[in-house]
Amino acid sequence: MAIVAGIDSSTSRTRIVACDADTGAVLRDGRAAHPVQETANARATETDPQNWLHSLGEAATGGLLESVRAIGVSAQQHGLIGLDAGGVLVRPALLWNDPRSAGSAAALIDALGGPEPWVRAIGSVPAPTYTIAKLRWLAEHEPVSAKRIAEVLLPHDWLVWQLLGHPKRRTTDRGDASGTGYWSPLTGEYRQDLVELALGHQLRLPDVLGPAEPAGHTPEGLLISAGTGDNMAAALGLGLMRGDAAVSLGGNGTIFAVHDQPVVDLSGNISSYADATGNHLPMVGTLNAAQVLRSMAGVLGCDLAGLSDLALQSSPGSYGLVLLPYLDGERTPRLPNAAGTLTGLRAESMAPQHLARAAVEGMLCNIADALDVLRGQGVALRRVFLLGAVGRLPAVREIAPLLFGVPVVIPPTGDHAARGAARQAAWALAGTAEPPQWELPEAVTVNPDQFHDPAVGNSVRQQYATIREQVHPETAG
Image 1 (tube, rainbow, N blue to C red):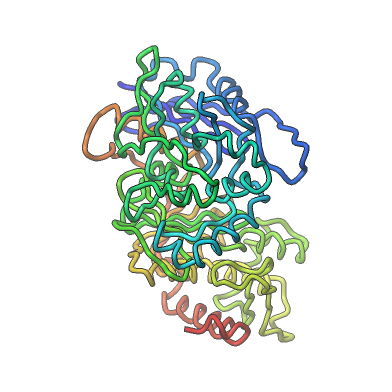
Image 2 (image 1 turned 30 degrees about the horizontal axis):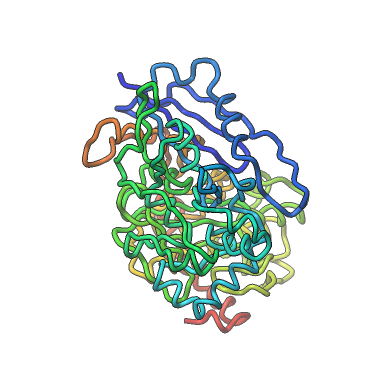
């Protein structure tokens, strides 16, 4: 039995899984937090990338990597590690969620003539998270460092380079490259003109490997696969195929689907990424997801489990209550200055169970609207995978398939991105045309008709859409 390992380096910790290369069964696992990084600027999210190696070493203790033949690496997307002409780190790595580049992203959009030219160039409108926005920020605020930077690596690129012993050739993959803002999934090529627009000069950029192409071997002969970004690795770990979507219900909602071609959405609502298999991973996001339920639970004086129990005591339609869950404005639909709206208040509907269900239905109707944005661009959806603790709440499990109109898969808890990195390593080790077929054990599928007539779900969504269009007419149609 061959053993492969997957490493996932997130914003705060490293996770490692060792798996059977044939079946995907997790044999061993470990994790460790990144060392705390103090910064002079309280708003900054940056770190010495050596911290990632320290936590990787800690997570791998106890023989976790013993007998491993290949390793794959997943890491947070959109980061920036700037090196000088000699390969020396110029400044601490900028992480994906560093907020300082918001103005720089807006300046870049204007510099190219608005959102539409960006969509035509790279399939997306650059957000503050994108690597290219961080390049612009450096040029504006740290010009000395910006001029020194000769090449840029993403977090997973840098980790692969470290594992391989600093070879002259630097590599990345198409999935992670598609989140930079200067590699186009539409053409499969870098856009050095966009790099120069952001930074003022061109860069040495890593070679983009194919999905099953190894990055190389360590000095000890261990195969290292191409690696990828965390969302792409999660899709690979979950076994998503064309027609599958994943909905991650964190504080925000992240929705992505596997598609056979890049999506060009001139409205800018969809970010067109590549995946780790040769397909594409169009993505939409909402600003409001789990926080909607947490806020309502606070109003009702209960926890999330209690909110779920209350919601199941109500009925579809929440006794006439409709919650538009735009507590922090909204990205999809584009309502940056909106607030939440609760309608349908009557004496008989002012009960905890109806308020609880209205929160669940409102959050999920908003996610369903985002799924419809993907459908509107020709992305077929036959299943939706629900990720996150909120996705496992009984009320969410029951109501989601009713409103999404397709079967909903609840995967087991696990390090899906690390498992996806391990699956990529197994693929590179096997050298086959397709990745190994790994089963997802203990996944639960809930069908739209399992608890209610699907027509009920259509009625709830229509009621929600009617109120949305009355309060926000710009969303009509």
